[in-house]
Length: 140
Image (cartoon, rainbow, N blue to C red; front, side):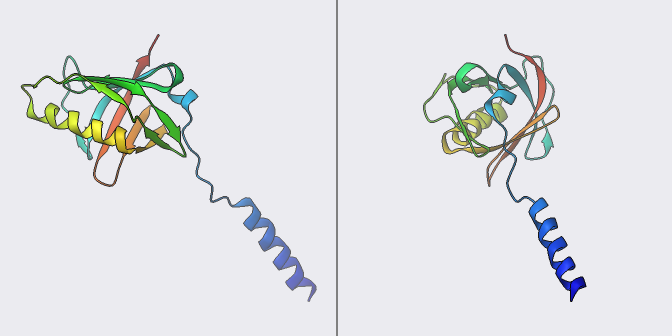
């Protein structure tokens, strides 16, 4: 009987050590960082002189460019980034992939994307799309 009580007590103690809570990215981890697009849906993005980028500033100001430049005030909640009111230039780009990425980033940020920051890699993901960025440098 004593062994059973000890076993139950140890099981409860071990269960208390296991946490189902999700560790979320916070705004301080993103602030003042610039990321360069590395892959789209797992496929490497070709390197270029002016690669697509994403930057985070004060008060979760999100800005960047694909073909067009965009910016807006983001909100980070439970690992999800949303930029409800985003300003974006509207020029046609010669590269059809960049035109499509303009639509992708716009939709992702307006509707909300899960954010994961692991080492020097930032991932924005929805059920349909995944954009992976590499840390480039600090934004001043």
